[in-house]
Amino acid sequence: MSSDPHAKPQTAIFSKGYDPRRSEGAAIPPVFRTSTFLFKDAEEGKRAFEIAYGKSPAKAGESPALIYSRVNNPNIEILEEKCAAWDGADEAALCASGMGAISCTCLTFLKPGDTLIFSDPVYGGTEHFFRAMLPEFNIKTRTFPADASLDVIEDLVKNDPAIKVIYLESPANPTMVVCDVPGVVAVAKKYSTNDRRILVMVDNTFMGPIFSSPLKMGADIVLYSATKFFGGHSDLVAGISMGRRELMAQVKGYRTILGATSDPDTAWLIHRSLGTLQLRMENQQKSALKIVELLLKHPSVERVAYPGLDCMGPRQIELCKQQFTGTGSLIGFTVKGGEAEAFRVLNSTVHIKLAVSLGGIESLIQHPSTMTHSDMSAEAKIKSGITENLIRLSVGLEDVDDLLADLKQALDRCVTT
Ligand SMILES: Cc1ncc(COP(=O)(O)O)c(C=O)c1O
Image 1 (cartoon, rainbow, N blue to C red):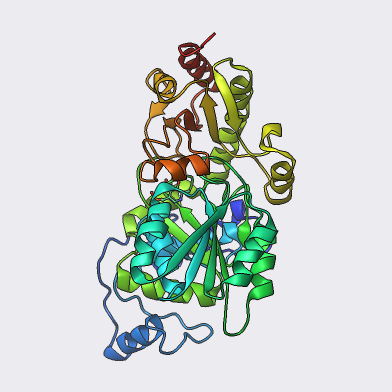
Image 2: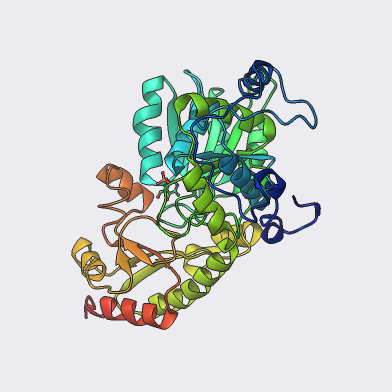
C-alpha cells in the first residue's frame, strides 16, 4: 500500500488501495469473480451488514467483511481508491455506467418537491433523464445556458428555494462550452443553509481527471462516464461518482439497492487502463491540437469549438485558463452546409470511425443532432447550439499524420465554392 501521502496520482495509483499480502502476493489484483463472500462467523456477518447499511459506522482501523458483489467487491474497492486519488476525493463509487452513476447520484440527493437546475447542453441521455424522467418523481428540472452569467444562475437559485442540485457538464457535450464551476460553487454556498443544502455536481467526463479537478474548485460531487477516458479502450461501460465520504456513503446505499453497482471484471479492466490514463489523454490532446489547426484553416469548416480557442470568446478563454490544465481531445466543428454536408464527412473518413462514444484509443466521429442528442426537440437543439452541420470528433492514438490526411480528404469532399 502507498505510504507516501505526497505521491502524485500517476504514482499513487500503482499501489494505492491494494495490499498484495491479502492476495497471495499477486503483483496485480486478481479478479474476484464471486457473487458472495463467506463470513468467518455469524457475528462477523452481522457487523458487516451494520456497517454496509449505515446502522453503525466502521471504527478506525476496522476492516469489515465483504458481503455480496452488489454491495462490495475487492476489485471495485481497489479501483475506487485509485480513482479517488486522481480527483482528490475522499471516496469514489463505481457504477454500471455513466448514466448509472448520474441517475443513482441524483436520486440519492433529490426528493419529491425538489428542483435540479442544469447547464445546457448536456449529454443526450442525461438530458432525457432530467427532462423526461425526474419530473415523473415530482422533481422539477430547469436549464440555464452553459455559459450563463453568474447573475442568471444566482437569480434562479435565489428565487426558487426548492433548488437542491446545480448540475454542470463542463465542457458541454457536444458544444464544448465551459461552465464557471468555482463561480457556481460560490452561488451554491451563498444560498445553502442548514435546512437547504445545495449540491454542485459536475460531469467531468471530457477533461477529467487529468486536465480538470472540479472537487478542488469546491464542487461537491464529480461524475464520470468511465466508459470514456478511464476505460479508454472502448471495451467496457462504467461510471463513477466521487466526493466527500459522507456523500458517497449515501450514494453507495442507493447504488446497492438500485443495483447500479459495476462488476469485478469491469473494475479490473479499468484498473488496467489507469496506468496509461495520463499518457493517453496527453497524447490524444497533442494530436487534437494539430487537428484543430487543420480544421481552422479548411474551407469546408464554418466554426471550430475547442476549449480556449479565440472563437469561443474572451470569457470562455478566461474560464479555461482558470479551470483547466489542458484542452483535451474532444472537438466540435460545423461544416458549411447542413446535414447532407456533415454526413458526407462522416461517411468519408477511413481511419476515423463512425460511432458514438469518445475518449478511447481510436478516433471516433459522430453527428450529435441525429445521434447522441437526437431525443431533444428541434427547438431545444437549436437553442443549445446542436445544429445539423455540427460534428463531434474524439481524437484517438492513431498516427496523427494519418488522422490529418483522413480528415482533410473527407472535408475536401464537401468544399462549396
Ligand atoms: C459527458 C457524458 N456524460 C455521461 C455519459 C453517459 O455515460 P455512459 O454511456 O457510460 O452511461 C456520456 C456518454 O456518452 C457522456 O458523453
